[in-house]
Amino acid sequence: MGRDARIWFLGKGEDRSSWERALAEGGWVDGECLKLDDRGRGVWRAEMLGRDCVVKARPLPGVLDRLKQRLGATDLARACLGAALLEAKGFGTPSVRVMGLSRLDSGWHEVLVTECARGAPLLSRWVEEDETERHELARRAGQVLGELCAAGVFNRDCKPSNLLLDGDELAFVDVGGVRATKGDTVRELARMISMLGFEPTGIGSRPGYWEVVIGVRSALRAAGVSADARGRLIGHLRALIAEHGDPTPRDNPVAPKADMR
Image (cartoon, rainbow, N blue to C red; front, top):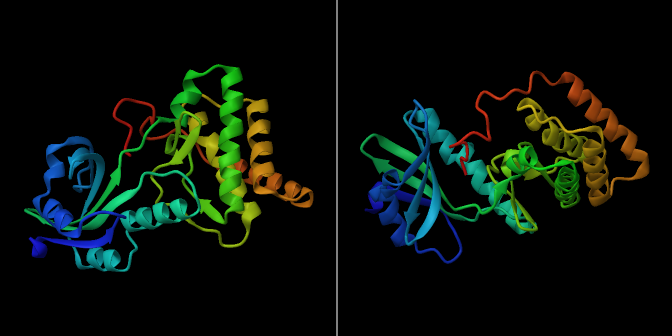
């Protein structure tokens, strides 16, 4: 079995030999397929070693694909690193159980297995709720992005469909865009804040004036941005909004089967 599966990352408390067998067998393809494109890149919800999981598999057909995988430059490798960084900083995200390679009939695949995420996408809640609740959602979303900034973390894909609300907790999914800050935290915070508005605007649920104000103020307070730097952040936000194209998504993220977690 070991020749048909290779482990690159193993979650805390997981058994290597059990996962080698599980990856070699490729049993996730018998689970619920959430997404499968014409390149064989898929997402499944399946039971793996006794627990429900989300499994993402990517074929590695060419030499360049395998080289990128070895260098940790694939989207699944970045997602594994992003989850580790978020957990190290105390933020919620589905834990990675295993990441590795599996040799199936169609060739080698890179596979990432995580715990199932709990909660509802913030975007779905945003569409469903009234003005009062939207104010609270904007405050909480702004706060968690400000806390990310204060912790030295940047997430280039923190759109509302990638934020899950479970009771009082917010968790991040699809975390391949998470990395340590590169230094210009004001610019990075502005970019994260802008992500909160583009996606709902694209599906016809554009944030109102006070919702924007509440979200920005909450992010600034949580990030500890100085009064002197706030004008620069607002300037970055205005530029991002002016430069952004049509935000209408190719696939509606609140439509059925859009949950690719």
